[in-house]
Length: 256
Image (cartoon, rainbow, N blue to C red; front, side, top):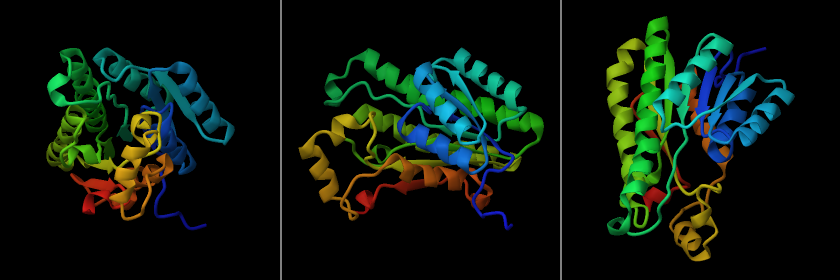
């Protein structure tokens, strides 16, 4: 049988924010594509449920509760994945937070700090851990950062969240430039509005939802599985000559 162009056979992938939404969809897609998956999120029950679904379907999964804004948790997460599967080849930085919705002038310092801690520091720390692991093995690998269209343009009422996603896109480019010689590719995905609990403040507001869908050529918002396909492409060898790029998956919202 011919091997499909896009697959993750013999790969081990670590996915953060994997207990629901986009992270869960990516974890399920990666497992179906042949990867052994290390799943991270803060809530163990939901995380274990995703891992159990993968195992029931014939895959291999390890659930590791972790807070991506804490460096000691990330070091423990990587160590657990390597101990279980012997290596990590692919990282998907997906866990994020957006504790404040409103004018930037009114955000409290605690919410500002929390947003940057998880969305920027967490991505940076874990990318560094995985890159060092890959370099120590002399192995090629792929890092996929889930950013947002909020990082590409003004993001009214989500300004600080948008700042963090712009930082993720910049980080992606710089890591790609620095790690390319090691055979480590670094790319980002910028989803538009997707139906998740994380985005429920937007998708459950009919006025906001209409504003978005009216500007979107496909006339609707996205589903988590539609982001998983982009992540699978960037994680696989099908994108072996792609690095430093941001793949926008937004139904055409940003072309308007």
